[in-house]
Length: 308
Image (cartoon, rainbow, N blue to C red):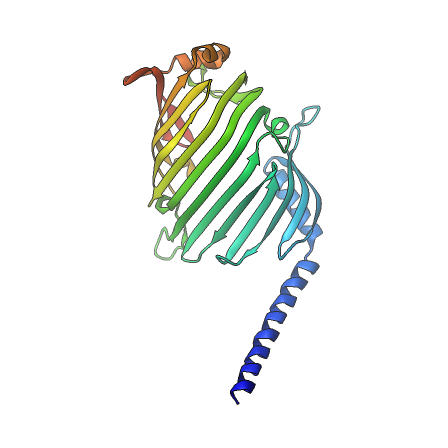
């Protein structure tokens, strides 16, 4: 009798798993991919971007798009160059249960996961991102070099603004960690629109010289909305950088309040090559503890920071 009962249990589980597998498989096979592609293009257009998708179809329990090109909308002739993404997929994740987005780009991978019920857990992993790939230079105007690895793990509680209001993710109560490492990071030239406080509030087009940043390491701890930069530094033949301080998170990212201290130690010959940027750098006050360093503070809000 025990053997028959076990066999029946196995059959029930087997049929159930097969039914779920068939249902999920048919969903991805019969999904209206053309309609989805048109919708994504429309949303990108509304956001000010032109999007081209080479192909879209079913992946391994995911919706997969390949040969994705994103460019800024402009009336300029020729039009802006596109950022290239080899493939992009979106589908369910099992561990933990939630939604997973994966992009193969810049000779590396970017994976984002969102899960949770009472609280939202956001995980982001970027591995082996080569900034010289994917036409980032043509898209941004800046010729970057080096590789980047970044990891974020954030738990965001859901709170209600009023007794009868629906609970929404509250970034001001988030907890987690962020790590960032770069290898041989450099800027090999290009043009960037940079807001230089000493020259007014409007962005100024600046021709960038070669800037070697080197290997950078960063560690950030977040505890109930209080963000502490435990480490953020780099050192190269051109300059040394060190960032410390805190950020008070808010429900909206623009209203987060930074209280940061940025210290820069440029090589004298490198500062001469900077031109306009070198002039702006010389206006930053010296570090009272070590005059060979320049020190500035970033306060205000992330949406409207103040540098002094």
